[in-house]
Length: 293
Image (cartoon, rainbow, N blue to C red; front, side, top):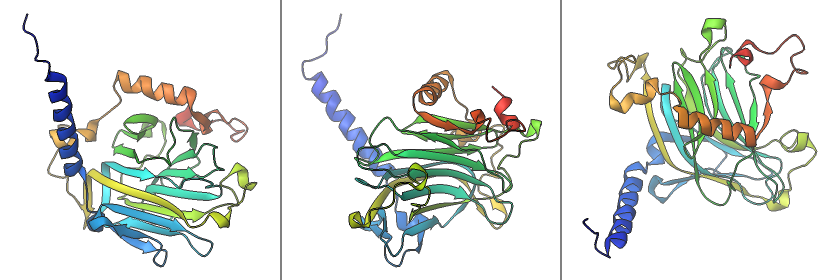
């Protein structure tokens, strides 16, 4: 039997590190090209030649940004490092949204907490102006210690919320039973850091400690493998969703058995609120999508 030289483990480690470095270079985006700072009077900054974006909040104001492009379906990734320490009362929102009174929206909201207490990830899906589809989770790591990748997969069949590649929520297209699904309105990416101490932490019981300000959230490594919508035309219109190219495989992506097991693991161990089990909130009966397994 052939044997590997003693230096093989070291060579493998070097190759792995080099590949990781090259992948990080390839994935690094210039945030100046993808986003506009929209409010905050200087509290939002794009730094390091477009590699890093920071939002900050003080007692006078928060801050925010939005994408230059609109998208109609996509796989959207962004690395975030959330406000550290005592972040009670603060909300970092990161979401897709269209405009108008019957807007569509896909939400990540990160609800701050006292030092040592876990962040809450609040998710919601709006379709045709109607939301009320909240699911909330704790995380299995400290989201303030380092950057983690938060992803939204949005295709005509489903919406999947993921963290570091682990799915935490799936919202399926159930138009067949009368549940509206976001599929006709292009959406921009928005993010903001703001004070919501009237509700964000323990229902508003814990207020923002302004002696800890400014509060700062950081963003990097944005990637959108997505259909850009411009002047009524999709950049994906040349590719049929029924037979997508390899680069557009997300257009028909679904959870495989391994991902389904990971989703169940997250929901069993880390979900803290699910509108589909809140019968007191819906005395006339749970929403129809909640009856589907």
